[in-house]
Length: 167
Image (tube, rainbow, N blue to C red; front, side):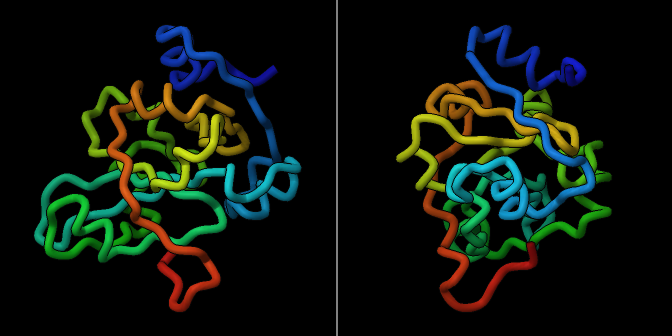
């Protein structure tokens, strides 16, 4: 039985049903994780940390394993001129969570701007990090959007379309 994480407490507090999905905690790649747990990659969401080039508060972006973040689209959606991916060490310093375990649910009290890539809304449930490596939570998409106050925006592109981001 995995430890009870703050992300799980938050879901329970809001009476949102969830399922805990465990996988080896040395895995980072969302597409590999999808394969190991037997779920299509478009249902496994990774959480990326993105910083405005001009400074200011970083943002969380949840995007499917099989998609890449489009920094231009995100900058536009967030009202910034330019944004960049945070380096892993910066992402960990900013969130207090380890890369691979960064979770919008675990950071919901911290007033982050949270973006959810638009295709998520086509699915009843998606899997997101529980806030610890090796633990994903299968959550109802609409409830997730509400509980973390995510802004839904088209900020991604298919992984096979042209230049990739700094995943």
